[in-house]
Image (cartoon, rainbow, N blue to C red; front, side, top):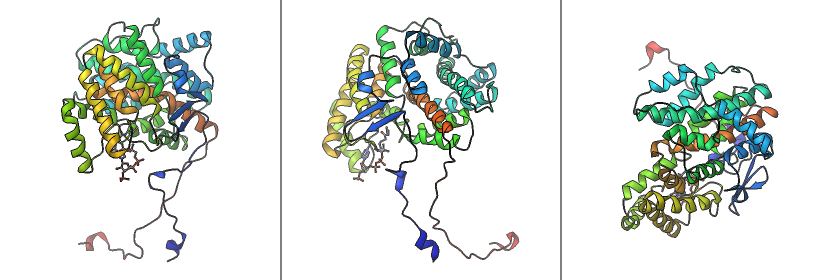
Length: 380
Ligand code: COA
């Protein structure tokens, strides 16, 4: 059959397939390095705030002080939601996954955005600022509503990360909390053509707008093989309960062919550079927060998995304990990842718009032919 001759072998999981050109981030999986617009993240960690990295990804350069002050003010000014979206969050079922509420609220925001339907560079940039700021407000509002506390408005005098913690907890965050969240957000801001970023680029390649693309990206990030892994890591740590039970748990999981959440990566053949920074924070913060046992369990898991499978922790492994030590409930971990990665998604969306061609791969048809049609009444 002619179809058989034309058939190409599909690349499972699109591994190694180049689907875009980008100047935003480079994952050097052989050497365990990650670069944002040419900057090594090891160089940026602890030296830049999240807004500086967002500015870098969106405008291609780190801001000077004046640009940073202006950019921060613009973002903070957008940290509010239309009443209808606030109401939608209030009416969401109390046990709905926060990622589902985030995705739904973000989708609803598309209906109220003053630039909805416009795809010019200027309109996209205005939407970008609103979307990034509003993702923060959706997450903090949901948390406040579910914990029966009043919603806290943003404070113009605080940074983006500080505002997030302020709106979440209703108190001015400590310096260490602010700076750790800045670094967590920075480390998660972009990562080449991750599944969610591909989803965002594929969506805007049809000329659907920013909100549609971010919804697609959120839907993709939610899955446990992607951003949803951080919540699963915490569930595993809680299930294990003590360092002395790690060996039996890990050996049992691997023997039955189960995956250990927070381990392995398509791109990295060595240690994920983000995990190196997060491990350091996890140790320090867990000690301060009285969660040393969680760090100890994590370390034992890392040792055992490396020994048995030769694979390393990815970004989601130590980010779980870092977030727990910051007082963030595990159901919200993937929302924090979303907040950070919204910067990268938007940068990719704008890059795709600048040089767009419809993303439309092909598939091998492996179904049948020449089936005889039977009218509905005669089917059995
Ligand atoms: N636990 C146990 N084994 C794992 C593993 C994990 N977390 N991740 C990969 N492996 C093993 C696979 O079983 C496979 O082994 P085999 O060759 O003996 O069959 C091998 O490593 C390659 O795995 P594969 O599924 O082909 O890799 P991938 O590139 O398709 O998958 C992930 C990448 C991230 C989806 C995968 O590592 C995974 O499921 N990790 C757990 C979920 C997670 O932490 N996701 C967050 C990613 S940032």
